[in-house]
Image (tube, rainbow over all chains, first blue to last red; front, side, top):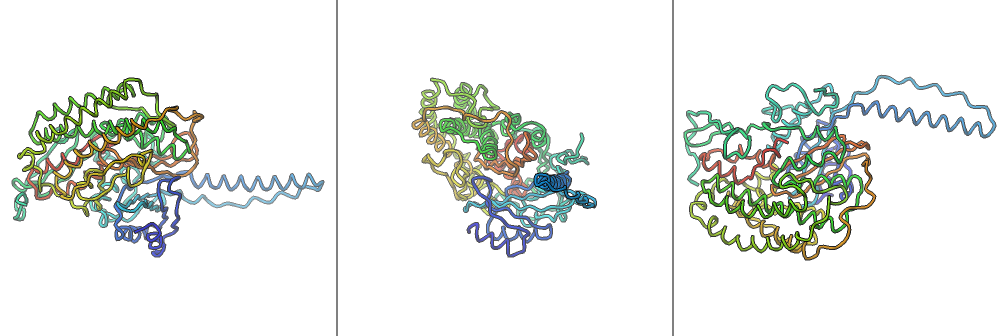
Length: 190
Length: 372
């Protein structure tokens, strides 16, 4: 078993993107982005190669789309300003400002489920990520492949409200049994 | 294996173990469905001391989170220190002076020995033997004194800093540590004569509480639990960090998969830790214990970073997501006992209750680390 072999296998099942990262800089060897529908196939491939499950967690990307748009707008504005300045330096009349492109509604922000797998023999930590919309965070469970994922998924459901479809027992693990809040969401207010 | 139920469960009752029970070492509750003397089903109930360290990480600066690390696994706090400083140093690209790394390894290994000694005493106490606890605490006291002189605290250490350690050792530390190593080496045969070769202990642990290698993999068990099942996995060897590659030490592995194997792994690890400390003291270089020019306000580059360390209970991993500001965007703490305990429900099925308690003791649970 080596990292290159598993990289090929993951690419073969059509995972969104499989990139090798610099281990010493990042601490993991493969960064895999999959769609929720491909998750079970990707995890099964790792299971067949003898990986063990390290952790499941989530990241809330609230505000990411707004930040991306702001960044893009700043880039456009900077380009326009540079153009105008260049024109002014050449003694020409400034070109008319380009009409600002009408932008639709912001795309919805995502919740990301992050799965870490490691291997007892090979030095190859694989990180699998899958993104789901914040309004409908549903990811298939992997607890039928790795029973250890059962608790990790319950914890992630506690903290982020991600629903693991098909999970046999998705009740709060660390939070109180009647908890209806998800503390690691960025818009959580106690 | 005579300790397993043969007939199918016909009439069962629920037995509540904990959350206040001496054998659960803290506030862990286990809901047991019993078929007579045998366990039909076991469901650990967690969260009694959940403090949401991950949320705390998101609303304070990188450095302000340091003291939290010692309050998760309070028995091996320095390894948790090590994991957290390492991941931040990786993210921010901070180089650590050699002497600081040596001091980190020496103190973390001393801490590992003290953790194993406490486990040893408490484990035998679970099985009904009282006096080994007193011997173990006597030895552990020497470590606490040594670490107190360096770190300033006796239990929830917060000694490491980004770029080094908080302060240098004093003149008494090296001779004191050498004297302690000599003392503990003289005591270990006594422990083995008193406890390991005790026929009652053997009967309680041998061939009891089997955890197969495959079960370890499916549940993500690490540390002495997986090494007692024949898996040679130790983060210090597997993905070497700090200056561990410079030391000559073995990873004890036992193939028997029973509670005795896990007991033997930890007892052997004490000697291996002593070997590491001894070599580190011999090679301890002179120099600064803190990197120069560590920025007061840290702003690691955007991205996510992972770092794992070997604690007394297994692989502790920290995943940080930085958005380039002075506070972490996301901080995931992967604690080893969380995974190790998750296999308990499957492993103890069909066992007698006292055997299941022996199995639970052999997992070496620290509840604040599971609940975080």
